[in-house]
Image 1 (cartoon, helix red, strand yellow):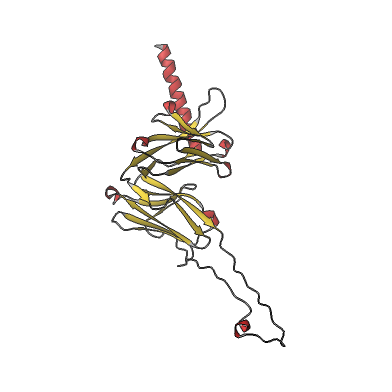
Image 2 (cartoon, one colour):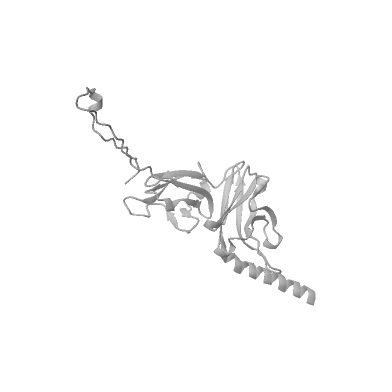
Length: 265
């Protein structure tokens, strides 16, 4: 009886330690993807875990979860890449099937005897008709310009709250304009017929990173890259001597400006 009591106490201690440690990590709770598709899961961690090994673990219970892939390795279509400068690692999943649905963990290996690893759980649903999906999971925009993300949701999520959130800060935007600046902002349009559109204007380099769109408690990830806006250039024209004949096209203005078009409302 004493033996079982000790085992129970040990399990409870490990569980409590994990719950406490999980405050140092963060990811999304429920992601969905179409059968045969790909998905990237961003996993955030605190500064203290920069040099620790990261891994992707599968299983409904933390104590029994099975390591599927580790940092900077690729295993049967799964790769884990660490970005210490961003306090984040990503898990790339490819060619997913229905059997890949289930509980997973973004996890960090903790050195030290008797010290449990740290992790945060996420549920993945793979189906032929996912609850939420987007046309492109990677979008590229230019500084001061804009991007749009076109997505869809199943009929069961028509009346669910729609959000566009940044993974790094957990700042979320709801249907309708949430930034009143004339030069920048985010607008989410819900067409109530199974489709939505997210528009971001006045982009800055700092806007780059991971986002997710969610309907209710189900979401899908999107990565935004923001490139530099080309600088305005001037083409010089050489002035010919007055004694030399010039053709009409050589007497045009001496400067030509190339302007960059950007979205502005």
